[in-house]
Amino acid sequence: MPCRIMAIMQSGDGVYSTFCEPWGLKELTRIKSPYLWRTDKGKGSLSIDGNALIIPVALPEALERLRLEGDPSARQLPAHVTVHFPFADEPKTKIVTPELKKLVGRIETFRIQFDCLDHFDMPDEVIYYLKVSSTPQLVTLFHTIWNKFRAYPPYEGKHQTIVPHITLARYARPVSEEKVARLLEAVEQHRHELHWEISEVEWVNVQPGVPGCRILGSFPLKRKAIR
Image (tube, rainbow, N blue to C red; front, top):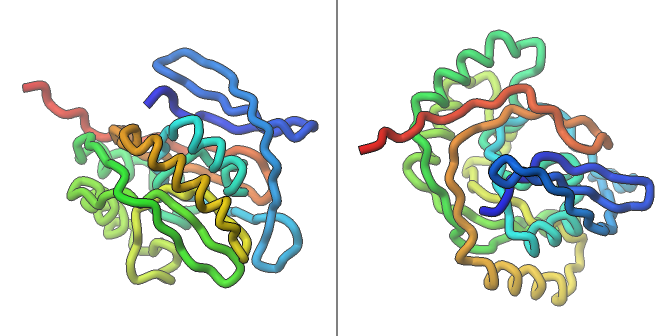
């Protein structure tokens, strides 16, 4: 992929600046993005709060633009696959960090790829996402962390099945056919680019209404031996 999204910042004129790091070079992309923030209580803003373990991924520019337009949480987080949310509180950093480093460091780097465009039906919105194939390595990574940190069940134990995915958009009901068509077209045009080499897991902290996220730790996977 051409770049990894490092941070997203908002200026006063509503222009969102996406910082990319393609092979060590930094560039600035300015994207006009009309956000509509929502909460479950309908007070006009999406509240994301807490710590999470994620696998950051880079999306093709067309899909990243749609994500910035359609997913309010894109203001706080890069495109990613969630490994574990909510995760440990910051006071436990000194205890959790060495454990994560050891666990993740035992798993070799691997590749994941796009499976299909799918959606979650919610009461007030529809969440569209890129489903990724559940490779043995990805399943091992998930379960290794879940089993070690049983005090923090994924999604607080609310879901029996966890679907590895990359969220693209959250559309309020009723969803227009035009919006769905734009997603489908962009995904089909860039299907051949939707694969990623996974080499690290990040522990991030997000705060309600605060752009960007803080990286509490970065944990590299084991490099494959050259044969």
